[in-house]
Length: 249
Image (cartoon, rainbow, N blue to C red; front, side):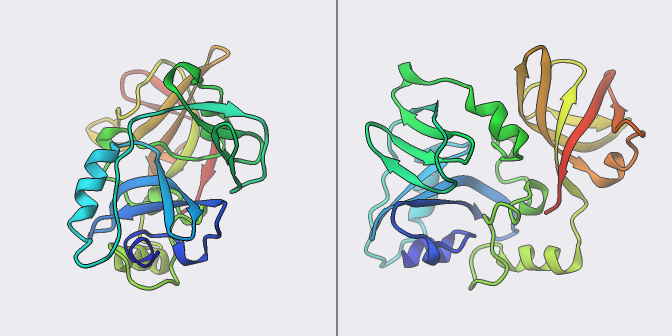
């Protein structure tokens, strides 16, 4: 418990057994190394379900900070995710498969043959980021709306990157934020969004649902403010983007 509370950006000490919360591991500059669901399975047992990235890489990096702490870190083999019936938000159900309550649905950890993608548009529209490899160690929590998800805490003790998180929060200093959008053409996670010669954001994840190309993007505030009365704007490569929902830090 003490190790996780000191390393991760959420209030780990308040997480009850049989519950989950969003959390993140930041670097000293406040950038998101990893974003994950943090499950408390027992008093002294936690499970991290990564939303992007590689478990073995994260475990190797975390081990450098263990020092004399009495704990074991284990990278489990990759598993698939499947959509389950609605369960209360933040509930952990450990029946036939470990399930995370997500309100309108549940997220089940299953064998690869039993996975599906039905949960993806539900979580995309809710503004739950999934980080492509290109965005790891690059994006600040405010750009992912992590405070809204209670994945970062302003009022807990020190953790890596906490000073940067607090400074951006109190000074309103970050100028890129999270949006769910509909795109005019296919796109891929990790793609950089450009406006003339400027890098103005990136695509975190995209999903083709009922002939609609939906995506979750990080976008510069000045570009988002340029959207017309119908909340549409144009970027390079003839990409037209409609802003469906937008979230603060």
